[in-house]
Image (cartoon, rainbow, N blue to C red; front, side, top):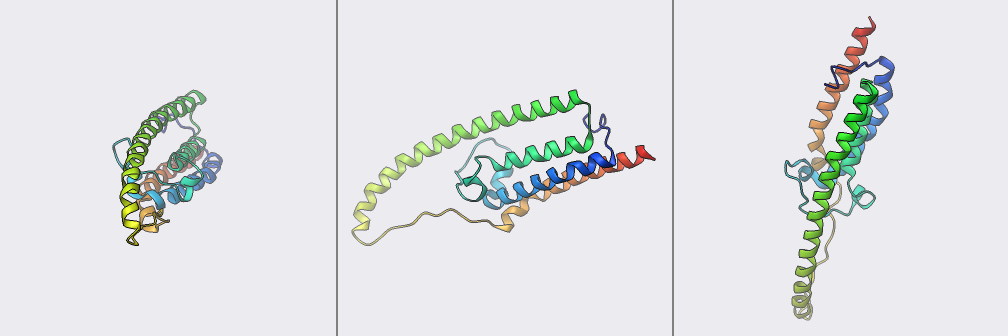
Length: 171
């Protein structure tokens, strides 16, 4: 619907490009830490990531998504009311997703705290024998980040169609 009611111009398509590039970059960076876990169909969190963009932002993938949405709205130039509907719908959808993920992370943290106490008690015995492990966050992995290729293709095709529409309407 947004595309059919869009009124893109060459200039509006170019105006959206910086936000699209920034959105792609944020998603690529975040995906390099979370990988395919960020592309599941179920809402919820399997683990908390605290490195890379996740040490700065709680939900960097969603920040990237919002940049992509705003960039495409700038490129497409739909009526103001339709842009408002898209943005309100986007914010509402992600508010529900974030709330569900936060609940899941709280449950995971609660379980982790209980398991940590059991491990602490067990490790007191093992540490006397010289055992011990250091936990670490995984770093950025380009192969995990490459799961973003679908986002690049879909957004690129949508932007290309907007540019074609702008050029066809212009001539």
